[in-house]
Image (tube, rainbow, N blue to C red; front, side, top):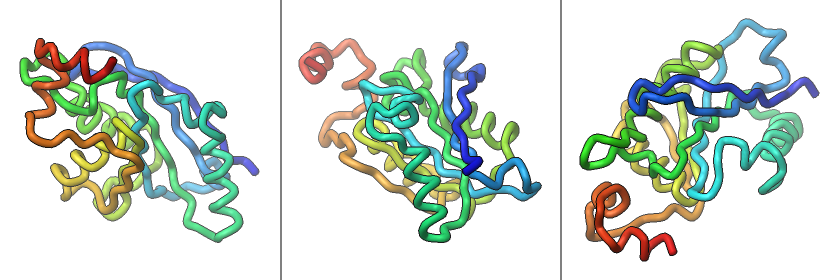
Length: 178
């Protein structure tokens, strides 16, 4: 069909390290000069940027391509960053800046390297589990940046400040993940 997934790395200034990502390019990407809407898809805690692309949970790129063809959907680019286990959240102590790495560094990488729309109507975000939490948080926090959000089985912890619970020395963190 011509659709494909590419795997790349980029340097995150916020984390001061290289991170991997995958990007789904639709069948018409190479033959057209147009810009495409972009969907940022955030993975869950025990996954990475390849999990939905290599058959671990089904072949999402194949499903997306088939859905585009069968239902005459507008072609789009889907970008999957490696969020490691950072909850797409900047730590309270400023040592692990995963929100900044995604919102500033990764979206900048995608928007400079690929022909994607750079306006609110052309951007959406989604994710599962940890990524569902990240998608909801980022979409609401940066509502001028994203036009839509989808979250599947998002982890939502109420009460405590999530950044402190997940990134601080609190002993409850290890209990939560065991």
